[in-house]
Image 1 (spheres, rainbow, N blue to C red):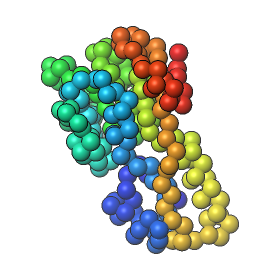
Image 2 (cartoon, rainbow, N blue to C red):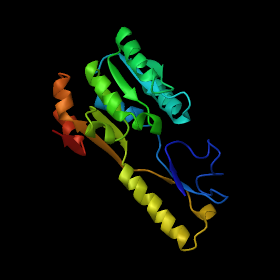
Image 3 (cartoon, rainbow, N blue to C red):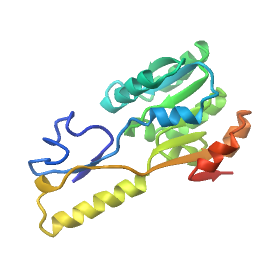
Image 4 (cartoon, one colour):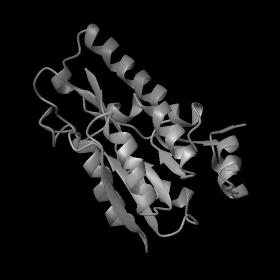
Length: 207
């Protein structure tokens, strides 16, 4: 039993979503959060960077979603393969004068969330992330799967397996609960006015 942020069928982890087969099943948190996230920053101009980890397929799915959903925006892919690349990535974004940043989902970036939030603030770069852990440490906005709800789903399936259910017969659960978190202090520091309609949609506003 496991949780993944990408498509477990494409990654070869299960045979299908409805009939996983084998000895494992999963919960899946889809990464196609870009269209909804775009609505959070419709006024953030034209040039948007997407920070991706070249070793993580989920990051490139986010990039493809961004390119497909962009309406009049120029998408700039910025690859970061190690912690040493992060400072260089922000220097590049400053040189190329990007207007906003999206950080792709993934453990690699999540474990460096404090560094990413600090650098985004230092470069006065509005940034959107996929999990609430970022605005909790000073990031601007997150929109993505409710992680606690996903963990609860994993727990429910684990209990069923311990009671005798066969993983092969348990369909892969796809997360349907998403949350929007806004750090209003960060927005003020960046000189951004968050629309009241967006604040009203937020599951949490950090002040």
